[in-house]
Length: 299
Image (cartoon, rainbow, N blue to C red):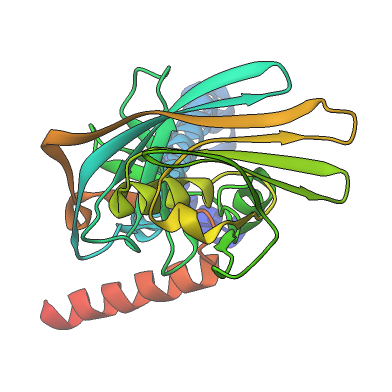
């Protein structure tokens, strides 16, 4: 940032003032008074002063703009160094407080612990929510523009983007009661605790990959952690309904679609630019100074 001190401004103005006034040197007092050259020189000095100050102001603004761009560039980075692929898609309906939302969730059975992406299906944009379980960082990504922004950790936690630590109970656990069993497999299970009743419906066909996908999606939701029955590791959860002590439904989740994609969703994290609003300005400034020093050494 350029800071023109008063001394610097005066030093710059001095030769200009002398250049304007010097023609009247050598004249008598009467000649000086009678001529209008000095009179005309006064607004000329003012004009030059104004021009110089305007130029300095424009230069200062340009410098500040350049610095902002430099800092913005340092606050951006690549999402990662790997290529992520999602081969399956699920559609899940969420009903809560009289509102219903349909979400899309993508999954890769070969990378069950990899980054997760999901979005409300009603949105037309390609912007998705992203969560990397390895780092715990949540973000919003635009897959069309290949850019995104990390969600500040505090906001992500408050909004529930970091999910919940739901787990599967041991097989011998008696917390869940099986209501009925069809010829094709498990059907409905119930668990009551502290004034809440959970009812889980399982799909009839065994599918461990789908079961893991639905479990991963449940762990992404802003709900309390669930102790799920062990059988749900093999037979996918089709729906979960929570009711309070008065029998009023608190929320209901239902998987309506589970399909393998003809064209997998592929994301090269090296090509995606992401902004990090939590990066410390001192770190950015230090990196900027280091880069400038390296550029100077190369020159």
